[in-house]
Image (cartoon, rainbow, N blue to C red; front, side):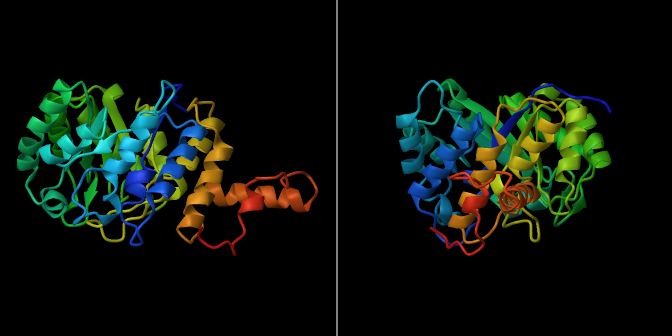
Amino acid sequence: MKRGPERVTIVEVGPRDGLQNEATPIATATKLELIARLRAAGLPVIEVTAFVSPKWVPQMADHAELLATLMRDADAAAPRYPVLVPNLKGLDAALAAGAREIAVFTAASESFCRKNINCSIQESLERFAPVIERARAAGVAVRGYVSCVVGCPYEGAIAPQAVARVAKALWELGCREISLGDTIGVSTPDTIERMLAAVAAEVPMDRLAGHFHDTYGMAVANVVAAWQMGVATFDASVGGLGGCPYAPGAAGNVATEALVHLFERMGVATGVALEPLVDTAWWISAQLGRTPNSRVALALAHKEKTNRDAGCGGNRPGSIAARCSPKRSPG
């Protein structure tokens, strides 16, 4: 098996991408508790919110309060806390709340770009140019997202060269990292390889990240394919939370615990502790009134329960099994 980088960085997007489509308002205190748990598990980068209009994304209405609280309590050991911004107004609000890292977002599909941010790809790049310039002038790092890098719910298959053009444009505007998103989860390892080959001809491979949704259960296989090609940064969402309002039928992001389990078993360092991460997947899922959308979270809870029932451990106070009753109500 061809090996990729011996250490990978996992960017946790659960508090933003994972929660943004939840219909029921989630208390700021609950979001802060989620972020604290993710930090305790060792996540080095946690995308915490989006400075978008509450009219379009009501769940992110507390963005200023949330980020200001995090930055006030941040210390030298704190993770990076990037936030999504759509325009200069959003950037100004993020800077006022203490942002040190932002992300901008466009797509490789014209139709998706218009549905998602109401403009063409070229217009989105023109809109983000002054945002990136002002952010960099303020010493704020910028990440760029490209959605629909393999397929689009409106246009079908997306040509790798189309992805490469958008990624190159973001790179030249000043984004220090480009996250390539399989928004509707239709990619397979061969399509990921072709797309990455095209993009890596324009942007250094070590500046690329993979953002794979698990609609058809292929996200982990796609992560392995990208890792083997040299990608060392992957976005993931605890418990497999997430989805996209402009991609009907798309499942959530690949579960963070699935990637930690994968790389741990392959001897690749992540710096993330699996057990508290799985515990967090169950905790946030309980707050949302459901079980995790994650095979790893379910399998480890079942394993611990089996060991407990057999008298082989797993009944310690605070264990996964002790906290994973299906009758538990949201708290």
